[in-house]
Length: 242
Image 1: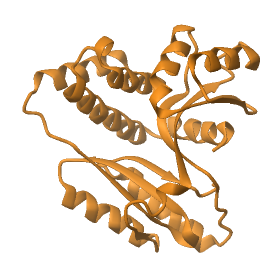
Image 2 (image 1 turned 60 degrees about the horizontal axis):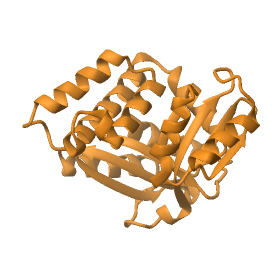
Image 3 (image 1 turned 60 degrees about the vertical axis):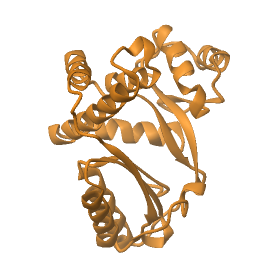
């Protein structure tokens, strides 16, 4: 996925209404709870928590909201146990879709995900049926308006920190890393004061599929909207060329 198209999606999501922003904060709040439960409340000793905090800041989550989430997760030993579930399937015209969820009720989540696929005339497949079409990468997107240094300087910093590639788009830069190197690269760029529009480990399609039929476009939009509105859904990846 090019940095440009990814950045356009980021800007679109950030400009959405308060309900959409609340959904993003809910997603990040769950990730904070899981990270604290797995590695403790001190970001200095918990790289996963540091990554989630970076994601929170990139999404303009207030610091006091982040701190409250950490303290709540650390203080509530009987907090809800979230289980990670991943679903793979197909939308119209063979569009590949991966859905990552964090849930306290697997049956509810499975039913909701299947319903979203069905409403869009698609279907849930078996594990691994589409994930081979994606590459798991650490991805950092930088808004050119927020970062005044040039491409060569950013590339040197990122590659020295362990990044695999740095690309320049019209209005953004994209830094790609191996998932295991993501935290190290992100922290190195963060120390240089580089602001992130987005920083996360994601699934990047190897190829994109274009839809020309209006009904297919309506169906895939219906599926994606239903998935993104579901409180159990953390991430949705697809290879539709929007």
